[in-house]
Structures are given as structure tokens and as C-alpha cells.
Image (cartoon, rainbow, N blue to C red; front, top):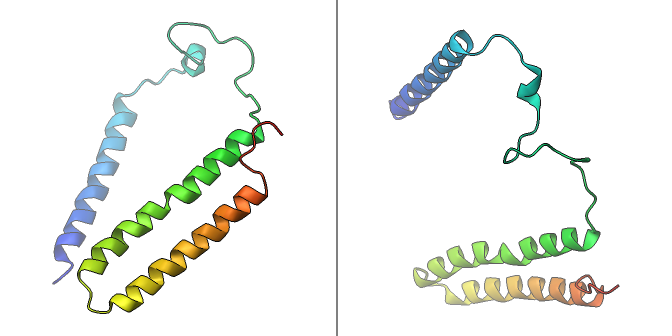
Length: 119
């Protein structure tokens, strides 16, 4: 009985999805036009290839940004849990361990010169 509302929601979502796909299939365009698959950007015809190679520096910077930015996602729940706990020593030890791991990663990034754009 606990999951009755979830099962009803799942059934309604599935039926609605199938009905909408069938309506789209019946009312949609039947004839394929060659121009339909063309790239259209602001009315300008595409020139050249759409694929370009980017330098690895952009990829490394993006990955490092994500790596060090995701730490905030882990620190917010920690900060909220810290206010509601009685065992502050354990919480502080977890925080210090997490920061040490991040510091080791940051030192590795600096020593590997991944952030140098000139090289």
C-alpha cells in the first residue's frame, strides 16, 4: 500500500508517453525532405567542416575546474550535518581528511604544470 501512489504515477507517465508518441506518429510529417536534415544556423548556410580540434589545454582546464568545483557539493552537506551532530571530533577529522586529499591533488596539479598555458 505504501507504493500505490508511485505505481499509479508510473502507469500514468507510461501511458501518457505512449499516447503522445502515437499522436505524433499519426499527425507528424510523413514525407522526408532532404532540406530537413540540413544544419540551419541563423539563416546562414554552413561552410566547411563542423568538427574542429581543440587544444588539450582547454580540456585539462575544464576537468580541473570540475574536479575542484565539485568539492563545494560535498562541503555543503558536511556543513549542514556539522550543525546537527554531537560528535564534532569525527566531523572535523572527516573535513581535515577531505581537505588533505584536495590539497594533495592541488599540489600534484601544480607540480605537473597542468595549468601552464605557455608550454
